Image (cartoon, rainbow, N blue to C red; front, side):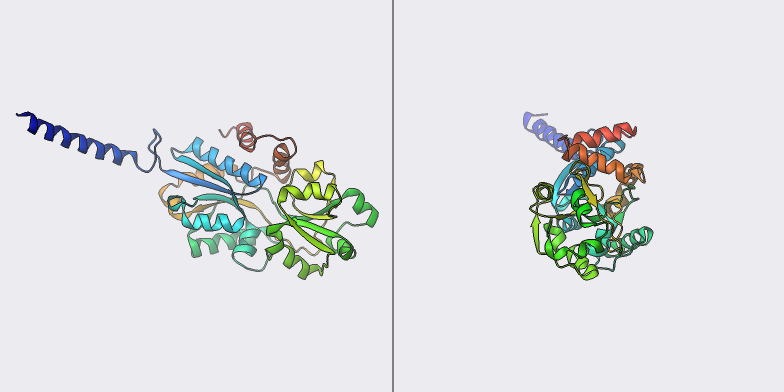
Length: 307
């Protein structure tokens, strides 16, 4: 056999070997040969913590590669990203809240029944976008309003209705998303008739220094915010039950789950496992003590024996 023919044969064999190796590699680069799943999150502490938890669980209990696209933005940013999918420069998984899905995305009337809210979003998301709500993780990150403890005592404020009596004398500080969402300020004004002296929209992290410095007298907050405790704030009672339940649950692309159902098994390991107080403490470790969100997430999973 001459050198030319030998070279052709060797080149052909090398090409075949390359093709076979590529096929075995599938969609990912890990030694396990798994595809890549892209985890996203919204742009506040709790979301970054649970985003890391989801990524850690999938890494620990599947052979999938995990890409983290955390701190993306608000609800609509993440929702549009998951509709695109990770292979189209979007995401495949993020944590959302039942009340947010019901009112903000589906534009449906709120309900105070947690099961009704969950069952509705689960059905509607699957039918409309082939997006799957997995089991809730247990905590209810509902919106609330908060004031300083001494301010509440001075004005005898315990409920939203109490606040309404002096709303025209005080300034509300709230997130930019809260100003626009139907389950935020617009709906709250319709329900309670609030007429605040002024409304200042601001980044979520600025609200607490603002109320500390009396730049605002009331802020929107999440019930699981860690800084509520450290800033000595009083959570007011939503006495007309305006805010729907906001139970947190992983939201996953249905086409991905069809191919890799083990993702659901991994993420459901935390089903009903995190209380409101647990989440508040986890948030405080980051916002109050300055710990790294990824480290806080990993330590919590280790304490549960899940990684």
